[in-house]
Image 1 (tube, rainbow, N blue to C red):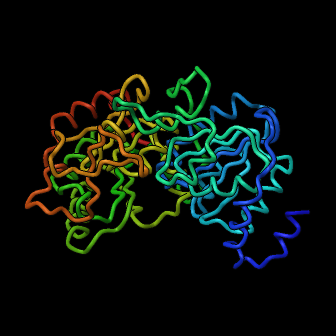
Image 2 (image 1 turned 60 degrees about the horizontal axis):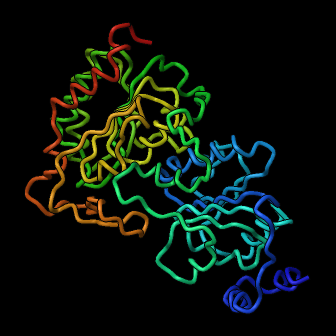
Image 3 (image 1 turned 120 degrees about the vertical axis):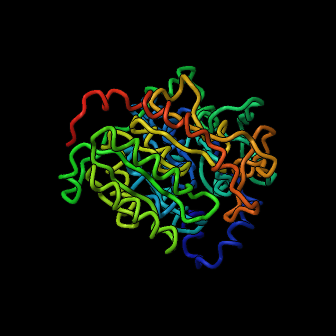
Length: 381
């Protein structure tokens, strides 16, 4: 009856509704009752890192309904986890209604993955245990019944998310998604490697000599080379196009920069023989598809967004030495002492040390370690 009253209110009355929440408390239910709600209002790459938690949660609860709240523009990616997905960017009457409809009896377990703003809605939903890291706002933290501490030592970001699971079997290496069916548009690519220039920010772009090195390495495999990512500003793009033209004499190269939507990019990556990328969201999806991958870190913290054995045996991440100019000390608003990342779109130094300082010999070594088997077989698709 209370919900019927709320539903009759205009959407613009949400603030009034939140006022009621200060007075009214939702019914508490047992952890074993109702569905499981995963709050993951995250970015593209973060959703991939959270994917291991979602997949493992499904394995541990095969007969229980799981609801995932995710961003609108990530609906194609969120649906890959084969759970009930509610897409939302902000609190509204529609979201409250969809959450109530998805599990009328409430949510016995709620796992919050760095999405604290949604905890306010729990005051209007029957719920049990709420598992989360602490956020910045105390009013959201009040809803948390089980606080998960952040590791004091550096660990990959996906494992920070994985810590929200209570199970002891955290074998991230064996938690993955299957490949997606390629659309007709890409069915004639054969076997291919991807070089992904997934950024439009100058501070994160690869130097052109590094692009030439990557093309030379990929050509040794005799596979088709697929170029993906964003089209760049004219000067850089013209130089890149020239490099592509030079290497087309030796290998088949398909340039798909700025020509794929999200679903198509995921299809391409999931079926690739390997990918070399800047540290961006797609590299985390490659890891989830168990596609061999190399990420050249640049600005990013290698301890946080890179890879460490034994979690990702098909992955390599290569970074320069930590620099004093890498100064962002937070992860999703959580302060962690060991984060060492730069968030600038334009480098303020004469030379972009974080990219220029990446060891080229290490790239060569890791490439042959990771892709040696397909080099040995030779032959293209």
